[in-house]
Length: 156
Image (tube, rainbow, N blue to C red; front, side, top):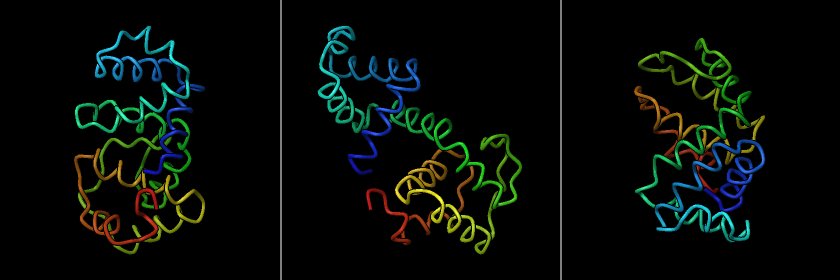
């Protein structure tokens, strides 16, 4: 994703979800072999830059995924709900228990188009990639859209 969006996610956790921010910061400090208190005392701009660099490492993929998932569920709950509603999937505030094994191409395209009209394209792309990767069900048509639709390119 773009550096600006990555910064937005870290800043959102810092301002709106202190437990998530501290958990993420502690994991980054541990990965950098620093004591969390030392890392916490660094100027916030430097600390956030170090956090973003470290979160891109494969060893912290689960921590980064949790940060993104929580940011989406809290800040973009309406987007998640809009997507699932457009697909006629029962949900509770954007959270779903069971996904259908496949999705109709036309319905999926209409739902994605609706999101892109209403929300920032990069945020939509991050959400749809996260949706595709974090669910047990993988829709081949969504995967194809993510790979081929220029509007859904991360950082684009």
